[in-house]
Length: 67
Image (cartoon, rainbow, N blue to C red; front, side, top):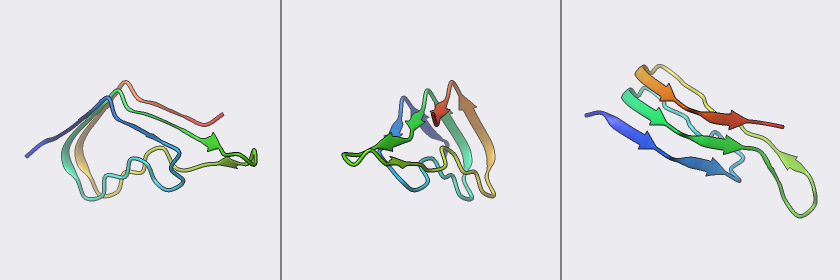
């Protein structure tokens, strides 16, 4: 059965945000992710996407950035 992730967002996470592991038939569209700072002005980063042993993935219109 296919999985559709449309208009999703992972923010303020310090581990992997999008992590398809042994997934198949996945569509990820219009996803967003970025690093952030908290009250003490330190920046926290994570991998925006990590794809492991997956097949038939479509990623369209992603906004995964670190600045």
